[in-house]
Length: 438
Image 1 (cartoon, rainbow, N blue to C red):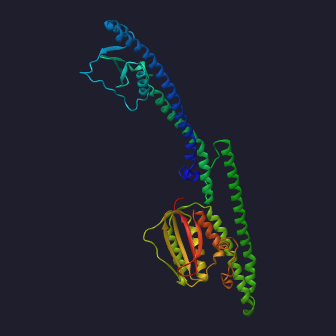
Image 2 (image 1 turned 90 degrees about the vertical axis):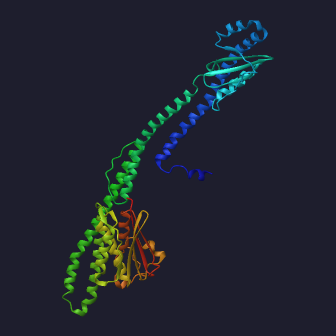
Image 3 (image 1 turned 90 degrees about the horizontal axis):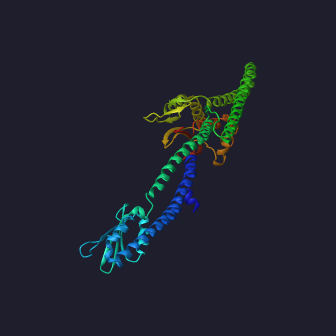
């Protein structure tokens, strides 16, 4: 039962806060309307009708017991604001009318019909009440104002309640929106930081919201400082290793050809590892750079042309219509180069395809290589993770930063990297996803 109701409740903070605000006001108005209108107005109508019924009882006694005193009855009815007129059943017709929304009319009819001699009650509108007095062959119509039997303008309470309730609800909602706005700004700043953007944010609002905002700023500063230190460490170590590596390669050049083959191979692998460290450091720096509009399909086409210039083993069909997005082109280019480069290293054929699904743009890179076992896909996305059984170590496995770099770039663009087995080629299928709504 609760789950079925919860499905229809608002999911946003504004909607839930408005519901919390409106429900008590609505129930309060309904309770006041039922209790006050039903009890107070019904009680007042009963009391007023009974008082008038006593006056009608006097008129009935005069009319039916003192027929010669009709003038006296008229004189007696005048100060009571009751009009007496004879009624001929054979010539006239007495209507019994009551509008369906005239709730107090039910009380008036009930109380008046309890008086002996009153046979019918006519309530044509809000201003007049007509009563038919019958005793034998004598028939009279008593007419008097509706104000004498029911409270005047009972709807004014409901109208005033609705108007002021709506007014105070609007005021409360404006105040509530101002109180919730700092929370929304905090959520936007946190979401932007998760995508690699550092937007301007100043804590505001209630004490608790300001405390959460200040905690977020402290956390963001610590994370940015940690990323900066890690990037500087990687770039510094990689840069410092270049000098001894250069001396090592210079010394190797003086050796005989037979002695330096294996050593030069090790030196080249060390150079590739250093370049990978520098690439990872650059990707971290690019993650915090500004974005600008660029054609994603054009970037993919340019990368494919550069990667297939020598091998000719990469296929790609560019869509006719461009896809303009807010991107970091250098980071996108580096991620695609990693994916296509891995395919060229471990496979004979690489296929690149693109598509758009709802709020996501997909760049899919497939190859016919050995692929990655399903149980090791999660491990492959971790930094410094090398899957030697799945990849040929003799071809150079790097330090395990290629796929983590691609995943970081995708996440910074509101997307993700999904790895699976290619159904077409049987190798690895890498789905590089970018969010369209950012």
